[in-house]
Length: 264
Image (tube, rainbow, N blue to C red; front, side, top):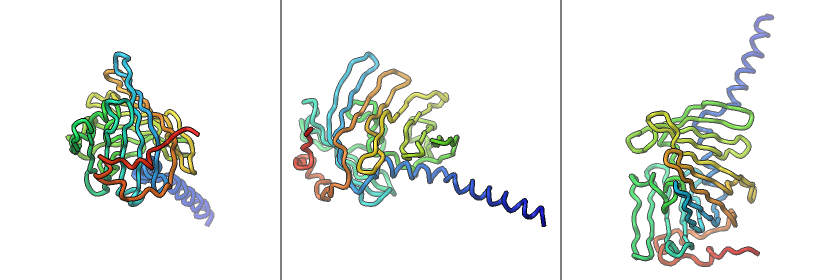
């Protein structure tokens, strides 16, 4: 009887440890919810500072509106550019899907042209920055497989590998996720020579309306130099954004009442 009594606590302890560590896919899905689905909708103003490899700088300023159709699933997003003058009036629209590629459009006011961003271009520069179109709305976790590399008291570190490597420029990436917020705080992408060539980081986070939120992020080109930093202001959630502002009509007629953000 004594050996059984000794084994039982061991089994219970093993089961408890197993419950404490979620499956890698479950960790990624929690991080996806924390990063892109806080509240039912959201709005923020963003200032993007682009620094090229020669140290030359450019600024972009825009407002992001986002509304979820379902948590972790379909979602609408629009990005309205206000500065500098050569991009004022440009609008980026995303309709996010959970069962197929997202739909993305870019409205160019100077040409009065709505340009569709093809699935093959989703990992190209977002309006001249080091961010990709896919970074703005998020990469579908179903496109990759994951394994847990490390767990500490304060973070998970996982490896993501594309299911279709021919569709992307990376062979794998490592993502560090903070346990207290479930926000990804660092992602490094590796090339075929196992060299990290691109790094995405959350430089500052805050809790806004009860939701952990990245307020300052950075993308670095580790191969050629240069970086883009993005800072967010006027962040708010659960505004009750109407469905009809997420439409093609808003590309040419932006919803002004939702875009007027000023300091008190």
